[in-house]
Picture (cartoon, rainbow, N blue to C red):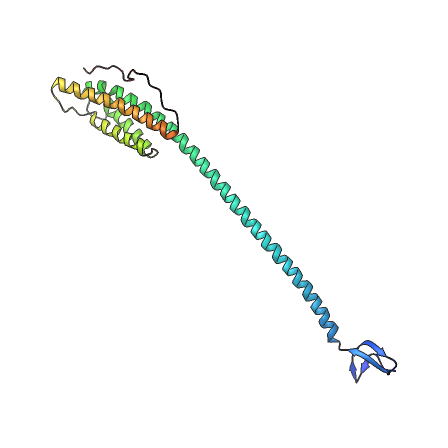
Length: 216
């Protein structure tokens, strides 16, 4: 009968005994340890693989959410910017149209008062100064068509304070031309502003909307 714990003077783990032959069948102790180690390693590898896959899924999900949030933010910002620009255009262009008509209507009376453009106390100087400031602000918002009419209005305002003729008839003709040009520019500014804002054009009857001001 063999000792199940000893074989050839070495410590072993009993795996089985063959009693008919009087010997024990044994296996080295490192074998079950190695098997157990492989089992643990496999389990650990499975856990790590699962965690890695979950991490990648989470990263992809986070990236998709980040892209969605960024697109939503940009869309909202663009919408807000568009609304702000439209509101600013409505305000500025409305003021510009009113001031253009007012300036055209006051051209002849202002010039008849013989007030010079370089006198800071004169009404002509103050009127031109307000008009220039408004034209300047509107130019930052205007498209190409409206900008062209703004440039024409600026040129008109530059000419408003000059008296190139001493002859009464020539002076009156010059004033009448400025008056017609002033109202034509005011109408062109309004039409271009409406078109840029997508508003319907203003209906004008056959009668001219210029006041029938006879130059003195």
